[in-house]
Length: 460
Image (cartoon, rainbow, N blue to C red; front, top):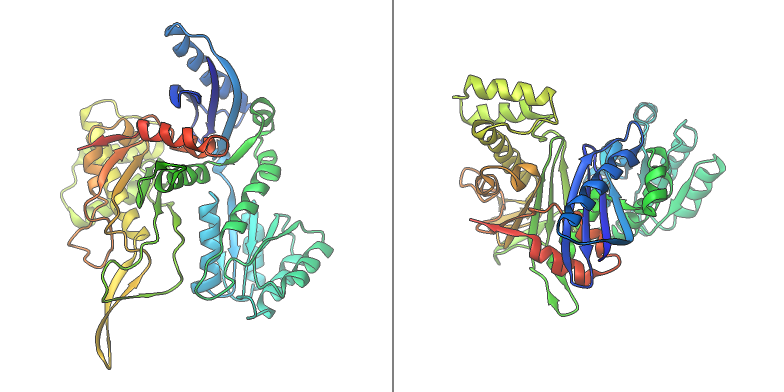
């Protein structure tokens, strides 16, 4: 059997999925602890041995044709965005960073101060995205910021994605100071048009060429043939393929993916999210079709105490057992539920994390009064008509009550302003292969689409 392997080097586990692309079938999966602090190939070899044993038990022999891999190990790609105004170019830079799978650790707007530079130096980001000014607009700000970065001790690669008239000067300033600078198209060429694709591609290229070496993933590159992309980008590409379809194989249309993890809860939405009613006015920066947000305070292990406080705000009656469990899992982040009670407590934490993350991701609607009368104004995406909600993560794939967790993502009358999904169908990525679909879309998109459709399990 000739197989293609999709590998993900995660912060906790290294996951391997084997596919027969000729039949468009998932053959098997395996995982082992990620060994980033020693030799990352130790964990990979353990997962591969487990996979081979599983397949051989079926009486089959295998021949590995190719390997594709993604990574979020060692904290992923830590990135800082710098722009002109918080509401426009800085937010556009944030969209590019998150869509590319980077972990945005901070964002700065207007002119960088000496204090800002000192803070960036202390944070030692893996990458800086420097934006500012629409084409034909402000040039001075991005040039001044380039001078500030040039005089700093910052050694991070810098992607320039601002006003095209200012770009040659910006690049010259940075390169004269010995900084690595890459130029891409403006992420906000016009006030009402986002252009994040070129910046995302550049982030991915720098991740592959430079960051994998800095993260100690060289041995993995030698063994697998290279890290193709950051894991979150792979997930987003897989979701995008499922949404759009490919060459006669229909996609599902508008959908959302929510990934509940121990450190973060990530939300992806595929769809433009335009107003669903004719009497609503859309305001603010346009939303990307493929949007990703990362909630770093909603991981159900690292941030369990924070989530518990949110639960207490609505339900004062929290048991001592729940409090003890939260304390334990926040200090033992690799813990998995040992019995029914622990599984239910995990579901409670996940439900609150999902509810909060979705409300932050979704748009909002408000009423404003003008001389002509009352007007409804929408900011962000209207996700009320989203048809499909896909859950990713152990608490959903293996938990006791995935329906309850995903149901918490739906519209809640307590928050009438929030444009969350009204009545979507619920699915779970039970085989953990949405990332693999994104990787496979690079070489076999049609087969990848068929495989992910088979893998997703509907829950009621």
